[in-house]
Length: 143
Image (cartoon, rainbow, N blue to C red):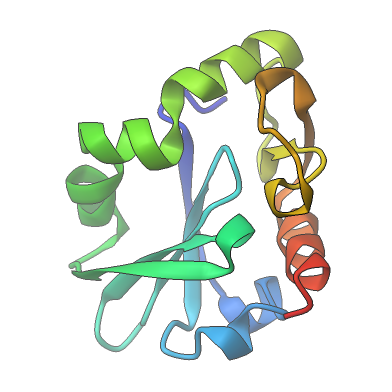
């Protein structure tokens, strides 16, 4: 169960884990984590440059180079402003109260997706498998 709103995972090749997204963010080759709301944490294995993929916006924001995922988590993910605005911990707590805790590699999914008119109110969420969610969002946005 995640309490912080995110999970760090063993690094996985982006091309294998997120094939629909990989061509749009070629500067990143590995995925090393995700948020409870389906953001993916990306890294360039050569430079250490890290980014957060915002799937509903079809965009990624870079945060610079980090020595390892733990440093990224400490300096970015646990920063109070990031937790409030991106991870939306209070929002996630309300969803978790309704749906229960997530299983590994599972996320809370707004239905319908916000870019298709969804409100993102806590009662509109369901749970689903992370990698499937990421691919379906990419397909829905015709990436």
